[in-house]
Image (cartoon, rainbow, N blue to C red):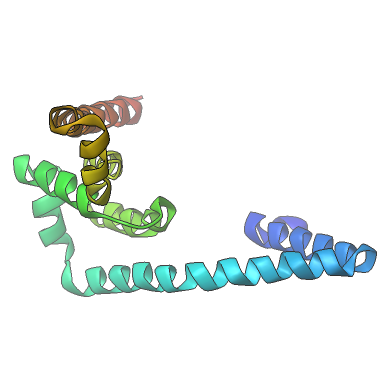
Length: 168
């Protein structure tokens, strides 16, 4: 019976049992933990709603042919540029991007471009003025250029590792 439940359901059951045991032993601590969980859930749900809305809209607007043309195997320089710009412009917690990226990969997005997107999330536009204030314009421009260039190298390496792994 336990094997039929799956890892996620089993984990949920263990957490619920632990909360119940804690509630019997120390109700106030269990209540505080549950309240913290509800606050976290309230903070995450709107962002998850946005992510799932983006997935829904991408399913409506992007057919596989269009996605493959811009972000697939034959995307060329334009696909790399789209991944860099999208990574720099993206915001929010990174773990909330994973479902959307997984959906895009299933539709044909290259893993290399996913790696480039994720790497370029490190370039934070709102922080650039503060970085310029502390480190100077020249240092920030050089650092940003290095980050973008290394994101491209990272994507290239990821693609070659995955190709080598698929051949074995």
